[in-house]
Length: 247
Image 1 (tube, rainbow, N blue to C red):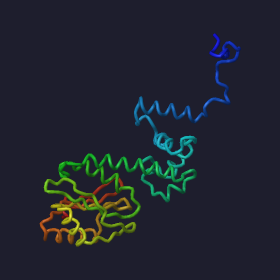
Image 2 (image 1 turned 180 degrees about the horizontal axis):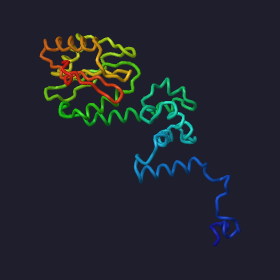
Image 3 (image 1 turned 30 degrees about the vertical axis):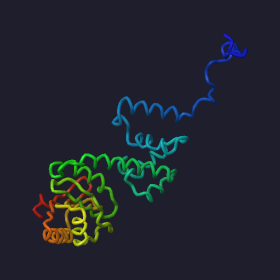
């Protein structure tokens, strides 16, 4: 059959219908399509950690084979979760990782935290304890320095705000009871949950942790603000002051 304008088709000209090898898409593009189909048909559990990282890196590096970088990230940080939670300064030490990759990984981390936090919105936190611990673990368990967060609650124990009250070293963060209470009054909070992480992984409270909790509890009580608990987040473990009889 002749084409419009009198041009012949490939078959009419006796030419092969196959695309020449040097015109075929690069191998990593076919690999990407197979990965996408596996993700869509079998779900994310069908992908290994490095494959899930590859999928994220597709967005940052659309024309590059991302498997070597994904494998390098796993080799350095050990898992998908550790890779997306790693500090940017450490991510940049991995060969091939530039700003685009860092931004992609941090976007995924932010999305994961927002999804976990969404499970807490408009719920009484004391009745959603497992979800709360999951959110705090995702947020703090992999942090390299201590962070003290305060969860400010309303009269129905719903979350008003989750705010960082201090960042410190690997084993110490200064927190000022006056500032905690001042912020609670600004938000019209009626209760608090104190949270901080131990980068060592061991959630056992220090004497300073116990003393700081007692000071905040006493300062808050003056204004009728309850301190429901103080949670310490470790690696795969958590400690509740109330459960341990420390509050």
